[in-house]
Every structure is written in structure tokens, then in C-alpha cells.
Amino acid sequence: MTKPHLELTGVEMVFDTPKGSFVALDNINLKIKKGEFVSLIGHSGCGKSTVLNIVAGLLQATKGGCILDGHEINSPGPERAVVFQNHSLMPWLTVYENVELAVQQVFRKTMAKQERHDWIQHNLELVNMAHAANKRPGEISGGMAQRVGIARALSMKPSVLLMDEPFGALDALTRAQLQDSLMDIQQDLNNTVIMITHDVDEAVLLSDRIIMMTNGPAAAVGEDLYIDLQRPRNRVTLADDPTYVHYRQEVLKFLYEKQRKLESITPRRANKAAEASTQKDTALAVKA
Image (cartoon, rainbow, N blue to C red):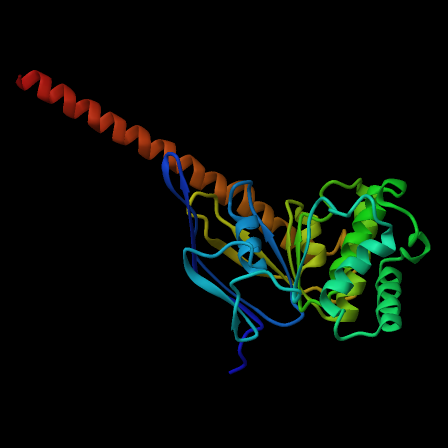
């Protein structure tokens, strides 16, 4: 049996707070194949970013762990590149220099100077930003800056690309353009992608799988939905596709029906417990 490319097993994450222990994640189990595009979706506070940070090596799970190609993840590494919602470019460096910073860090000892230059140019061309190589982040748009952030991440040759709502702060047209670019790049490079999103359409359009998280605290994997849509994908064609619409409805049902029902159970149980306690206190008072 083929071992998974990336595996999270029995992951639990507990944070110490002034009010005591807070269980953010409870028994997260995921197996991800090489080249899969996986989206994490769920309501705010369901632990999506915590899962991503554990895979990135920025957090250590309280229990369980994460294995990448047979090696345990316990610290950050260039084989796992992160793209944040904020591009996080160095404002005093040019577009070229921002990508060069990552390339120098990873390949300074293994690539010759000209080879590094060619590799930087190649990654800028991948995201259609070679023409702005000498501009600084303040001189380009937010969408262009996010493209540079993606180029910087790809320049490290990561086997896993981790994306934390990478298009969340962009306008609808720019977001659509970058989504299309990401699909093309991912198909060409066959990177494994794990992306956090709150956008149902984005998740269905881009993903091979959608991991739906239950509400926190003690968030878990609620459903694992496989998206069987042929690639390359065209958003206009898919808009009326019955299969696409079905997947979209499945995610919406989970988010706004199943999880809403779970939320409504808790207050009822609390009310029943309060009523029982009141009745007990009344009975004791009568006896007294």
C-alpha cells in the first residue's frame, strides 16, 4: 500500500489561557496524496489556521503529529512554503529582490549565481510579474503583490504549498484571475496545496477535496468531500454544471444547516441543565 505524501494522525491542539486549557483541535486525521489540492473550510474559530500552522511547523501538536514523506514535521522548512492573506513582502526591496531573498536562503550553496537569476525570472514569469521586477511593493496593486508572494513561495521548490486565505483581501475580478493562475501553476508543477478559504465557490472550483471543519472548541474533521470535476476547469462553464452545483450545495448544507444545528443543541442542553439545577435547589429548600 502506497504511503500518503502528507499525513496528520490523532492531532490534538491545546492552548493554555488565563481561564484554563482551551482545546482547539480534537483528533484530526488526514491523509493527502502528492499533487492534491485540498481546501479547509469552516466557520471562524474552527481551527483551520491551527491545522495549517502545524503542517507549516509553526506549531507543535499537543498530541499526535504530522508526517511529510516519512519525516516528522517539528519545525518550518522550505519544502513547505506559506502564502498568507497579506503578501508580507519587504517594502524596501524590489519585486525581484523579494523573490531573490527566498532563493538565496534556500539555494545559495546549490545554485550558481546565473542559475539563481534565471530561477527568479522563471518564477516571476509563472505569475506574470517579470515586467514589474524592478518595482517596489508600494508601486504595484494588491493583486500584483500577492502574485509576487506566490512567486516567492514557489521559488523555494516546495512540495507542499500552504495558503491562508490568499485571495481574501482582493476584489472579485482580481481574485478570479489569481484563482485561474493558481490552477494553471498547480497543474504544471504538481505541488500539493492546502488552502484555507471561507469562499464556497472558490473551494469547489479549485479543490480535489474539501475538508469541512466542525465548530470549535475541540474542532474536528466533519466531512471530507471529494470533488470529481474534470481539469482544466472553467468557472463560466461550471456555473450551470449540475455536479458543480451539487458539490456547492453539499458544502453550504454542512456550513449553514448541520453546523447551525450543532450550535443550537448546546444552549438547549445548557437550559435543561439549569432547569434541573433550579428544580433540585427548590426541592432542597422545601425539605428544609
